[in-house]
Image 1: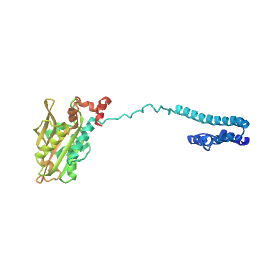
Image 2: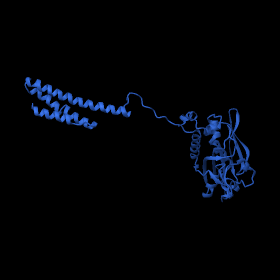
Image 3: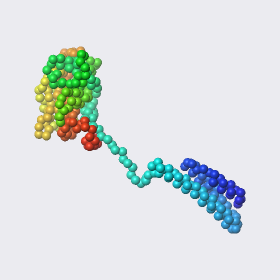
Image 4: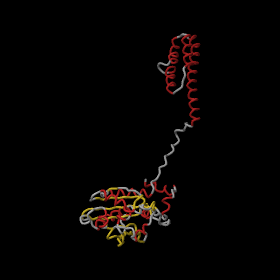
Length: 329
């Protein structure tokens, strides 16, 4: 047992700087490792010296071991202090904070559901601009400048000569699509439309409309009825429905669809066979091709499906209202 060697070990121990967890592990293995640790080896050599020297060197080696462990404890203590200052210390036995799952807006839920339903039967989903010109929104759809039906779709004009306005229906998408494509096609479009209407529990100046149309050879009213039946039964299940004769400038014949719900008939959508004049306006031969179109308001459907009484709540951004739709996520 060499006194000079012990002094050197003591000096090395004191000069070893522990700054990181890796430094700590290196220090522990070097001095206290079970097999090759310097202090561990010194304890093993004690057995080979006399009892007289064993008492002297045993005390010195124990002091070295105590000093090494104290250095390790100081490092842990400083590390905990830093963790406390940064707020990083935590109890691993406490359950973690769960991430709050949001909810999809009921109008978006219904929109996505309708898109999925029509994609399954061969429809293509397309979109179009909300700011339109007079021709795409009115004239091309067989609603000329002095037509009385324009009063039913009074909207917001952004400028005059030429007329630029907020679209009153998604039927303008139908015109834009038919101008650029040749039949046959099946198309669905959903988006915001605008009407100059008094805001109430049942109406708003802006709402979402779904528009679908199908053009091919020999398309009949029977095809339209089957498509409407598929949509309604998919959304409401087996319910009573009826087709009532109606009037729209861009379809002939035209019909309104009602469903029997809560002991009363509720109007939910309009439809009809596309007027030949509309096809001519986009250079489609009405002698060869025919088609049907339908339109429905998303808000009105959601009122019925989710039993909501006031349409204005859709746009209030009330978290309490939106949280009710987490199960639909």
